[in-house]
Image 1 (cartoon, rainbow, N blue to C red):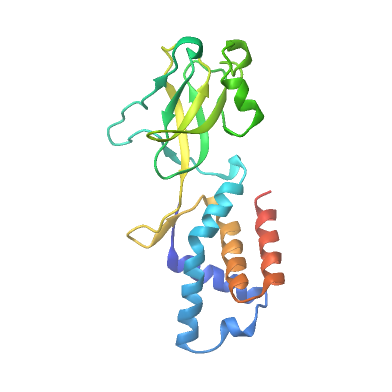
Image 2: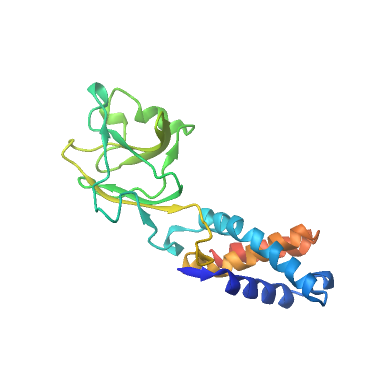
Length: 221
């Protein structure tokens, strides 16, 4: 859902006021108000990143598809060869931040949480023995890096006839041309608390900031 920056500024200021923050934050005068708004605005994207990375999957909205929605083209797959047959990878969008879901057409279940190349499980995915790797019954995905950029590696399919059935991600947040930010609706309250906490951290109110960070975590439970 797209939230206007003006609304976010207002909600964060209400949050700060309700939590009896330092009087210095709410000093009278247009100059002080503008300064506070600038500080709040500067924390918006960081807060959205934090919350979207920490939120459980059931609180996230659908997200964005890997493929090009305008042309409806299939996601391009690079298949492994030889002993790595039926494994493969797809390139991730440049603005990829977090995987929402990935599923190949012949899998029995999707993958929501990919592993990293540092994960001990990753070495098993590179094994020459197919039975050790992920399978169509228990697939595994990993975030890796190739010469062309970051990729999502998948292990494994039953055959190379498989296609990408679902490939959804959350991008890094940005402020659009209409001064709006895309935030998962059920994460919005946590984002407001997090922005307020970051704003208090800037003004040296660490204890009050931590209380707001804890509130944000509670909302996400």
